[in-house]
Length: 255
Image 1 (tube, rainbow, N blue to C red):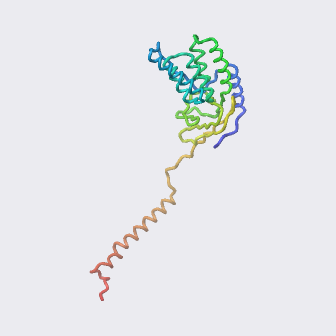
Image 2 (cartoon, helix red, strand yellow):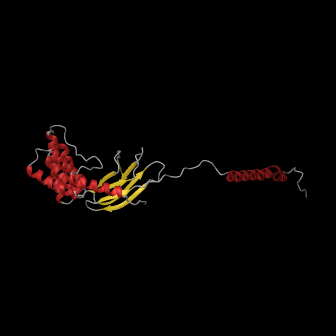
Image 3 (cartoon, one colour):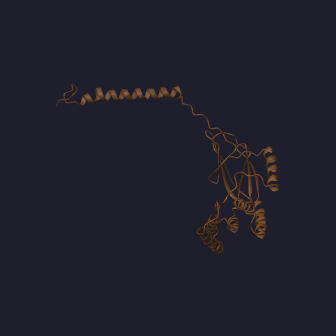
């Protein structure tokens, strides 16, 4: 792992972006997550399935089976488009420690469901603020604008635009970052981020040395000598040594 020292410029930019995140929450490293809902009025069959999955999700959440509960609430929202199902999606993501996705789910609820119960909207606003401040931010400087450049976060490819430095939002915990560019050594970083931590890194994509197709003359000369020697030995066995073993050869020893 190779990480260069962080420059003063990066730290200044980090402070600026951190302030924007704290005050306006406009800095995003990727498009916010979205949850599907019916394009129109759901059918009675869809609503019936949504109710069943909603009850199932509630039971699973009571047992602490958050991943299964998330799947059930997600399906309930997909079938019904009811704000209560999306609210439970957001709170379940919060329980799973997926604060970035929970924030986006609360945002979708607040912006896309003006009909939601005022108490639910108040709870969503409060919880949204709670999870948003826990999202960690990584600022990566020294990233070139080159075609084919790829950023991987925890094994998942993250889309890059022309904005520099690169800003990546992640949940608290251990993470692995990797930048890849053709004909360059990959840049790697591994570490653990705390709640709401802001980290500045300086990427160092080192070009790989060009491979020369030319061989050294001495090497070619050595190979030529070995080939000639091999041919000479082979000729001896073919034209001289083997002939002495023929029954009618002049070199045959008669007893």
